[in-house]
Length: 211
Image 1 (cartoon, rainbow, N blue to C red):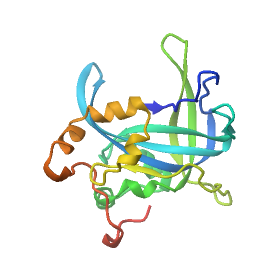
Image 2 (image 1 turned 90 degrees about the vertical axis):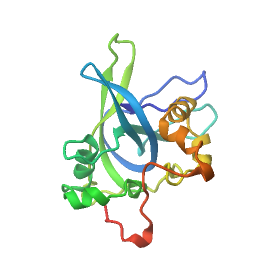
Image 3 (image 1 turned 60 degrees about the vertical axis):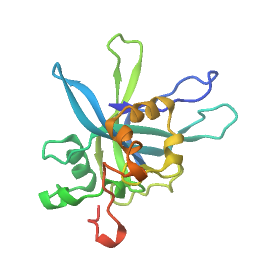
């Protein structure tokens, strides 16, 4: 599932991320929590995370009167490093080599924030043909000699183990509502002293694995 950011006011036509291979930089990681999803006709629960990218070489005016900004695109993953998971496959492709089981067991995905990448974006029409969606099909390393411009959007990380209310309040309403319906969110704010659960963020002094 891809997240297509709102384009702005009602007078601004909706825009979607251009298709093709793009220079990009990861600027955000949002831990959603456990949601229900239908897979092959069966309803299952999965812990989800959203990874955000900005495309600094693809810009547009999204709100009238504001300067041009990079297109952004996000992808929702199941928070799993199982050998067949999409997250593991995309991150292995991104760094240019597979994860060992030991690396996968200790990798802190918040280290992705700020890292450049090439993202391949494809367009897909809705079932009724009235809408077009942009989706991240794959992620790869930056080619040698190609430089990604400096980050434009402010970094944002939201995790249950290190809750940031300011980031949460800045999310689109639909996403904040989705998060607030998860058992992780409900449990966190029902626990004494806001005891945290969910994604563990590795501290800098714990020698995290390099990406």
